[in-house]
Length: 288
Image (cartoon, rainbow, N blue to C red; front, side, top):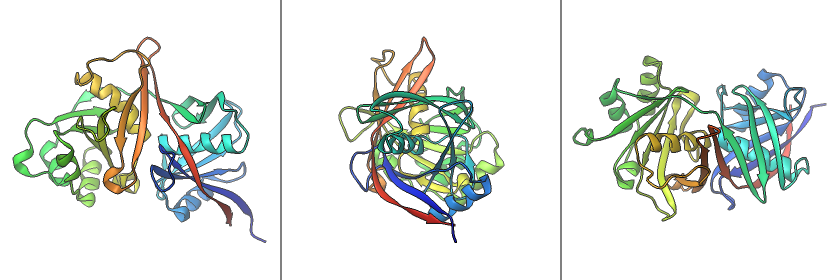
């Protein structure tokens, strides 16, 4: 008889079904990493989160794309917090910790919103292969000037462009972008953003491309939205910043998966958090 595993699909960074970024969530203590990879491939969402018990934290959390395990995933962590809340394993105002491949991260539930700590990356100026990367993103050659590049120590490359139209007109060649990332080991994924926004309360709009991880374009990326605040501070793009003030970022609209991510940073504690809502859309059983 086949084994049964409970499976949830949860839309993160939204409170509306069919928006935000969908993640699979499974709580199981006996799956091997190879089992998890096969399940993530079968579910075929950008990430599936696997929760299990931990001796080092409240829970262990792993994230798998259809092709590989990843070091960090914001939306699948927000989805995991929502899962634990719906199962009655955390309260509406409770802090917990996850053991992850990126270390112990602090998270919490706060009256229907979920907070996840994002590890603080190092930020660097990036000058290599700029024209090749822009060509792979589908940028017209006469629009190469006046763009700003910041590379994170985790391999995320941020590029600031001048308008929403510029951002939405991008038509990446994902095979070429993947090849460039493999050629230049400094960057793996690309986040392109603009300070022109749809909502008046937002500070930036972004798109995120990760073909190296088997994700051509991610709808809403918490692990990019968090560091985006640090990138914007470095580029002096936020004039009225205060510690723990929540800054809002937009993503997913171009894919009809509108999502909104809150981000706050405390410079004294050097702690960065993303904030989001979530809604369960599928509950079922997986047989293997």
